[in-house]
Image (cartoon, rainbow, N blue to C red):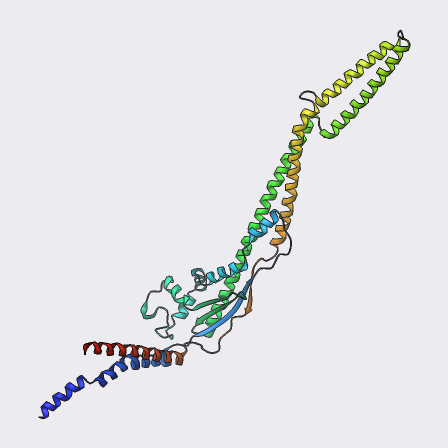
Length: 379
């Protein structure tokens, strides 16, 4: 009888719902919460956060530029908002990490044996490749941008206050160097473009001026309009003289047909007519006439005038570009300097322990519902 009762008791214990419930609660809630309390309460290393704030600004250019000057102003630099994202991307890049870790300082700090195994870089003897360090370091850098004020907040997590402040300060300096490089490149492009335009304009003005001067020398033309006016005045005087001779000749012939002055007046009339024809030929005649030379002369004069105007515009643009290059187009202004934290803000030990407990209870409740549902279907 005693043996049968003991067998029945062991079977009852095996199927005791309360005992199963305790096992499930222990496995899902008690053990995870206990492990979390042990890790966050006794093992997890202190994390120090150094915070800084900065803004990237571009001074407004109030000078009104036109033509090529406006083109240079618009093409030289981007908006400061775009450069803010550029600096953010650089601070989180492999290049920035390589600059910080050029002596291996970053890898040494985050691989310190004093750091707990979970938080440490290269834990469990994993690879020390740059790519793994980059992926690890990404979690230690936080960059936030307030779109309303354009203020960026940089946070660095490290396992000592000095290292957190050092990395934060170094990243800000590297960001300033990047901005300086962008400024230098922008100034170089701005001046180079203006210099090229000025050089082309100077060459064009020189070529057109020489062509016009050579044409004047070879064709004995200085100014077509002035020379045509002089020729017209000369022809007008000759025509007046011709009219006077013809009038005098008519009067003499009417009064004294045998006057000995008549042959002389007729000869003088012929001479004046020949001179008028000659002068008219210089104005309106063949290839050597002023009218024939006027087209080429006006074309060369117009080309030279346009070249001089382009040269004046290029000189103005170069002057504006030089003045613009003297100013720093973009600059990184520190609003809040990197602080040296005097207390560890992470891990939030009680918060993490309670979060583990809450999550475990939720999982436990879900499992209980599933088990109850299965039992109902079995029944």
